[in-house]
Length: 298
Image (cartoon, rainbow, N blue to C red):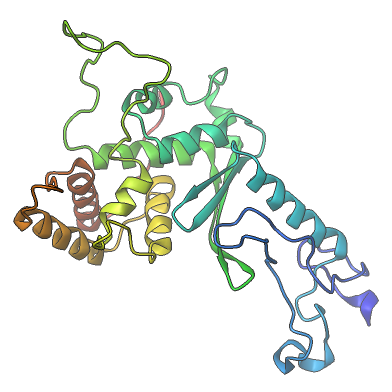
Protein backbone atom coordinates (compact mmCIF):
# COMPACT_ATOMS: atom_id res chain seq x y z
CA UNK A 1 0.00 0.00 0.00
CA UNK A 2 2.83 2.41 0.85
CA UNK A 3 4.22 2.32 -2.67
CA UNK A 4 0.88 3.61 -4.09
CA UNK A 5 0.77 6.72 -1.90
CA UNK A 6 1.32 10.02 -3.70
CA UNK A 7 3.30 12.83 -2.03
CA UNK A 8 1.04 15.88 -1.83
CA UNK A 9 3.98 18.26 -2.31
CA UNK A 10 5.97 16.71 -5.19
CA UNK A 11 3.44 14.32 -6.75
CA UNK A 12 5.95 11.49 -6.54
CA UNK A 13 4.68 7.96 -5.94
CA UNK A 14 6.28 5.35 -3.72
CA UNK A 15 8.49 7.63 -1.66
CA UNK A 16 8.78 6.98 2.10
CA UNK A 17 6.13 9.06 3.88
CA UNK A 18 7.23 11.32 6.72
CA UNK A 19 5.83 10.20 10.07
CA UNK A 20 6.81 13.54 11.55
CA UNK A 21 7.61 16.74 9.64
CA UNK A 22 11.02 17.55 11.04
CA UNK A 23 13.18 19.51 11.75
CA UNK A 24 11.65 22.02 14.13
CA UNK A 25 10.92 25.40 12.55
CA UNK A 26 12.62 28.12 14.59
CA UNK A 27 12.11 31.86 14.67
CA UNK A 28 8.30 32.06 14.65
CA UNK A 29 6.88 34.57 17.13
CA UNK A 30 5.39 32.87 20.15
CA UNK A 31 7.43 29.67 19.77
CA UNK A 32 10.63 30.07 21.76
CA UNK A 33 11.77 26.50 21.11
CA UNK A 34 10.30 26.16 17.63
CA UNK A 35 7.42 24.06 16.39
CA UNK A 36 6.03 21.89 13.61
CA UNK A 37 3.88 23.05 10.73
CA UNK A 38 2.28 19.58 10.47
CA UNK A 39 1.80 17.24 13.41
CA UNK A 40 0.06 13.88 13.73
CA UNK A 41 -1.40 12.69 17.02
CA UNK A 42 -0.45 9.05 17.47
CA UNK A 43 -3.57 7.92 19.27
CA UNK A 44 -6.24 10.22 17.84
CA UNK A 45 -8.83 8.27 15.79
CA UNK A 46 -9.36 11.29 13.53
CA UNK A 47 -5.78 10.90 12.27
CA UNK A 48 -6.24 7.20 11.45
CA UNK A 49 -9.22 7.21 9.08
CA UNK A 50 -9.51 4.20 6.76
CA UNK A 51 -6.56 2.56 8.44
CA UNK A 52 -4.13 5.29 7.41
CA UNK A 53 -1.63 5.99 10.15
CA UNK A 54 1.12 8.47 10.98
CA UNK A 55 1.03 10.82 8.06
CA UNK A 56 -0.50 8.56 5.42
CA UNK A 57 -3.81 10.44 5.46
CA UNK A 58 -1.98 13.63 4.41
CA UNK A 59 1.11 12.11 2.80
CA UNK A 60 4.27 14.13 2.32
CA UNK A 61 7.52 12.37 1.52
CA UNK A 62 10.36 12.50 4.02
CA UNK A 63 12.47 14.47 1.54
CA UNK A 64 9.74 17.06 0.84
CA UNK A 65 8.88 17.49 4.54
CA UNK A 66 12.51 18.09 5.48
CA UNK A 67 12.96 20.46 2.50
CA UNK A 68 10.08 22.80 3.36
CA UNK A 69 10.94 22.81 7.08
CA UNK A 70 14.58 23.68 6.37
CA UNK A 71 13.55 26.31 3.81
CA UNK A 72 11.27 28.08 6.30
CA UNK A 73 13.94 27.79 8.97
CA UNK A 74 16.49 29.52 6.70
CA UNK A 75 14.04 32.25 5.70
CA UNK A 76 13.28 32.97 9.35
CA UNK A 77 16.97 33.16 10.22
CA UNK A 78 17.78 35.84 7.67
CA UNK A 79 17.00 39.49 8.36
CA UNK A 80 16.60 40.00 4.61
CA UNK A 81 13.83 37.43 4.12
CA UNK A 82 11.62 37.77 7.18
CA UNK A 83 10.08 40.42 9.36
CA UNK A 84 8.22 40.27 12.67
CA UNK A 85 5.13 42.46 12.98
CA UNK A 86 3.45 42.01 16.35
CA UNK A 87 2.69 38.29 16.74
CA UNK A 88 3.17 37.64 13.02
CA UNK A 89 6.37 36.40 11.38
CA UNK A 90 6.26 37.07 7.64
CA UNK A 91 8.69 35.31 5.30
CA UNK A 92 9.31 37.12 2.01
CA UNK A 93 11.20 35.80 -1.00
CA UNK A 94 11.26 36.00 -4.78
CA UNK A 95 12.00 33.45 -7.44
CA UNK A 96 15.08 35.16 -8.90
CA UNK A 97 15.25 38.85 -7.90
CA UNK A 98 17.39 38.73 -4.78
CA UNK A 99 16.84 42.36 -3.73
CA UNK A 100 13.03 42.06 -3.78
CA UNK A 101 12.52 40.62 -0.25
CA UNK A 102 14.56 43.34 1.45
CA UNK A 103 12.91 46.09 -0.58
CA UNK A 104 9.37 44.99 0.21
CA UNK A 105 10.28 44.45 3.85
CA UNK A 106 11.48 48.07 4.07
CA UNK A 107 8.42 49.38 2.23
CA UNK A 108 6.02 47.62 4.60
CA UNK A 109 7.74 48.10 7.94
CA UNK A 110 9.63 51.40 7.53
CA UNK A 111 7.67 53.14 4.76
CA UNK A 112 10.04 56.09 4.68
CA UNK A 113 8.44 58.54 2.20
CA UNK A 114 11.64 59.33 0.31
CA UNK A 115 12.56 55.65 0.05
CA UNK A 116 9.05 54.79 -1.14
CA UNK A 117 9.24 57.52 -3.77
CA UNK A 118 12.58 56.16 -5.03
CA UNK A 119 11.31 52.59 -4.98
CA UNK A 120 8.18 53.34 -6.99
CA UNK A 121 10.24 55.29 -9.53
CA UNK A 122 12.79 52.48 -9.99
CA UNK A 123 11.76 49.39 -7.97
CA UNK A 124 14.91 47.28 -8.30
CA UNK A 125 18.38 48.47 -9.22
CA UNK A 126 19.54 47.11 -12.54
CA UNK A 127 16.11 45.90 -13.69
CA UNK A 128 14.70 48.11 -16.42
CA UNK A 129 12.84 45.39 -18.35
CA UNK A 130 9.24 45.11 -17.21
CA UNK A 131 9.04 41.59 -18.63
CA UNK A 132 11.34 40.47 -15.82
CA UNK A 133 8.97 41.96 -13.25
CA UNK A 134 6.02 40.29 -14.96
CA UNK A 135 7.81 36.95 -15.03
CA UNK A 136 9.42 36.86 -11.60
CA UNK A 137 7.23 36.06 -8.61
CA UNK A 138 7.01 37.33 -5.06
CA UNK A 139 6.04 34.95 -2.28
CA UNK A 140 5.09 35.70 1.30
CA UNK A 141 3.81 33.49 4.10
CA UNK A 142 2.52 34.84 7.42
CA UNK A 143 3.16 32.53 10.38
CA UNK A 144 2.11 32.53 14.02
CA UNK A 145 2.74 30.14 16.88
CA UNK A 146 0.07 28.31 18.83
CA UNK A 147 0.74 25.63 21.45
CA UNK A 148 3.88 24.31 19.82
CA UNK A 149 2.43 24.49 16.31
CA UNK A 150 3.37 26.77 13.44
CA UNK A 151 0.18 28.20 11.94
CA UNK A 152 -0.05 29.62 8.41
CA UNK A 153 -2.19 32.77 8.57
CA UNK A 154 -1.86 33.69 4.91
CA UNK A 155 0.01 32.70 1.76
CA UNK A 156 0.69 35.06 -1.16
CA UNK A 157 1.98 34.23 -4.65
CA UNK A 158 1.98 36.90 -7.37
CA UNK A 159 4.25 38.57 -9.90
CA UNK A 160 6.61 41.32 -8.79
CA UNK A 161 4.82 43.64 -11.20
CA UNK A 162 1.48 43.01 -9.45
CA UNK A 163 2.99 43.47 -5.99
CA UNK A 164 4.59 46.80 -6.97
CA UNK A 165 1.34 48.03 -8.51
CA UNK A 166 -0.70 47.10 -5.45
CA UNK A 167 1.80 48.75 -3.14
CA UNK A 168 1.75 51.95 -5.22
CA UNK A 169 -2.05 52.08 -4.96
CA UNK A 170 -1.88 51.35 -1.23
CA UNK A 171 0.52 54.25 -0.75
CA UNK A 172 -1.69 56.57 -2.75
CA UNK A 173 -4.82 55.57 -0.82
CA UNK A 174 -3.13 56.23 2.54
CA UNK A 175 -1.91 59.74 1.83
CA UNK A 176 -3.55 62.68 3.56
CA UNK A 177 -0.98 65.29 2.54
CA UNK A 178 1.96 64.80 0.26
CA UNK A 179 4.90 63.33 2.21
CA UNK A 180 7.30 64.48 -0.50
CA UNK A 181 7.69 68.04 0.69
CA UNK A 182 11.27 69.22 0.39
CA UNK A 183 13.26 68.40 3.48
CA UNK A 184 16.70 69.33 2.22
CA UNK A 185 16.28 73.08 2.78
CA UNK A 186 17.68 73.06 6.29
CA UNK A 187 16.93 76.19 8.24
CA UNK A 188 19.68 77.94 10.13
CA UNK A 189 20.28 76.39 13.50
CA UNK A 190 18.77 73.07 12.48
CA UNK A 191 20.63 70.08 13.88
CA UNK A 192 22.75 68.30 11.31
CA UNK A 193 22.20 64.61 10.63
CA UNK A 194 24.56 62.25 12.32
CA UNK A 195 25.23 58.56 11.94
CA UNK A 196 23.35 57.97 15.18
CA UNK A 197 20.28 59.94 14.13
CA UNK A 198 17.44 58.00 12.57
CA UNK A 199 14.35 59.21 10.73
CA UNK A 200 11.16 59.07 12.80
CA UNK A 201 8.94 56.03 12.33
CA UNK A 202 6.67 56.50 9.34
CA UNK A 203 2.96 56.81 10.17
CA UNK A 204 2.30 54.52 7.20
CA UNK A 205 4.46 51.61 8.35
CA UNK A 206 2.24 48.58 8.91
CA UNK A 207 3.16 48.14 12.61
CA UNK A 208 2.14 51.77 13.28
CA UNK A 209 -1.09 51.37 11.32
CA UNK A 210 -1.90 48.17 13.21
CA UNK A 211 -1.28 49.94 16.51
CA UNK A 212 -3.84 52.60 15.60
CA UNK A 213 -6.57 49.92 15.43
CA UNK A 214 -5.95 48.79 19.00
CA UNK A 215 -7.25 49.91 22.33
CA UNK A 216 -4.47 51.09 24.62
CA UNK A 217 -4.25 49.72 28.15
CA UNK A 218 -3.40 51.86 31.19
CA UNK A 219 0.17 50.67 30.88
CA UNK A 220 0.22 51.93 27.30
CA UNK A 221 0.62 48.40 25.99
CA UNK A 222 -1.21 47.11 22.95
CA UNK A 223 -3.70 44.32 23.43
CA UNK A 224 -2.44 41.06 22.00
CA UNK A 225 -5.25 40.40 19.52
CA UNK A 226 -3.44 41.93 16.54
CA UNK A 227 -2.52 39.01 14.28
CA UNK A 228 -5.59 39.17 12.06
CA UNK A 229 -5.35 42.92 11.61
CA UNK A 230 -1.66 42.82 10.73
CA UNK A 231 -2.41 40.21 8.06
CA UNK A 232 -5.31 42.29 6.74
CA UNK A 233 -3.05 45.32 6.45
CA UNK A 234 -0.20 43.60 4.65
CA UNK A 235 -2.68 41.89 2.30
CA UNK A 236 -4.18 45.29 1.49
CA UNK A 237 -0.68 46.59 0.72
CA UNK A 238 0.47 43.73 -1.51
CA UNK A 239 -2.78 42.26 -2.88
CA UNK A 240 -4.95 45.36 -3.16
CA UNK A 241 -7.68 43.99 -0.89
CA UNK A 242 -10.14 46.10 1.09
CA UNK A 243 -10.03 46.33 4.85
CA UNK A 244 -13.24 45.48 6.70
CA UNK A 245 -15.45 48.48 7.38
CA UNK A 246 -15.79 47.22 10.97
CA UNK A 247 -12.15 48.21 11.53
CA UNK A 248 -13.31 51.85 11.60
CA UNK A 249 -15.01 51.44 14.99
CA UNK A 250 -11.93 50.83 17.17
CA UNK A 251 -10.04 53.54 15.27
CA UNK A 252 -12.79 56.11 15.81
CA UNK A 253 -13.30 55.01 19.42
CA UNK A 254 -9.65 55.69 20.17
CA UNK A 255 -9.86 58.98 18.28
CA UNK A 256 -12.75 60.02 20.51
CA UNK A 257 -10.85 58.90 23.60
CA UNK A 258 -7.78 60.91 22.56
CA UNK A 259 -9.93 64.01 21.95
CA UNK A 260 -11.54 64.01 25.37
CA UNK A 261 -8.55 62.78 27.36
CA UNK A 262 -6.82 65.48 29.40
CA UNK A 263 -3.64 64.27 31.03
CA UNK A 264 -0.83 66.81 31.40
CA UNK A 265 1.66 64.13 32.40
CA UNK A 266 0.89 62.00 29.38
CA UNK A 267 -0.80 64.06 26.66
CA UNK A 268 -2.17 62.38 23.57
CA UNK A 269 -2.23 63.59 19.99
CA UNK A 270 -5.59 62.71 18.42
CA UNK A 271 -4.57 64.12 15.04
CA UNK A 272 -2.50 61.15 13.99
CA UNK A 273 -1.51 60.81 10.36
CA UNK A 274 -1.65 57.02 10.78
CA UNK A 275 -5.24 57.25 12.03
CA UNK A 276 -6.51 59.57 9.33
CA UNK A 277 -4.63 57.74 6.57
CA UNK A 278 -6.11 54.42 7.61
CA UNK A 279 -9.61 55.85 7.89
CA UNK A 280 -9.26 57.23 4.36
CA UNK A 281 -7.98 53.93 2.98
CA UNK A 282 -10.76 51.88 4.62
CA UNK A 283 -13.43 54.29 3.44
CA UNK A 284 -12.43 54.65 -0.20
CA UNK A 285 -11.69 50.94 -0.69
CA UNK A 286 -15.08 49.98 0.67
CA UNK A 287 -16.78 52.63 -1.48
CA UNK A 288 -15.28 51.40 -4.72
CA UNK A 289 -17.73 49.40 -6.79
CA UNK A 290 -15.09 47.77 -8.92
CA UNK A 291 -11.56 46.61 -8.30
CA UNK A 292 -9.31 48.86 -10.34
CA UNK A 293 -6.73 47.15 -12.48
CA UNK A 294 -3.11 48.09 -12.14
CA UNK A 295 -2.09 50.75 -14.68
CA UNK A 296 0.89 50.12 -16.96
CA UNK A 297 4.23 50.95 -15.36
CA UNK A 298 6.41 53.52 -17.07
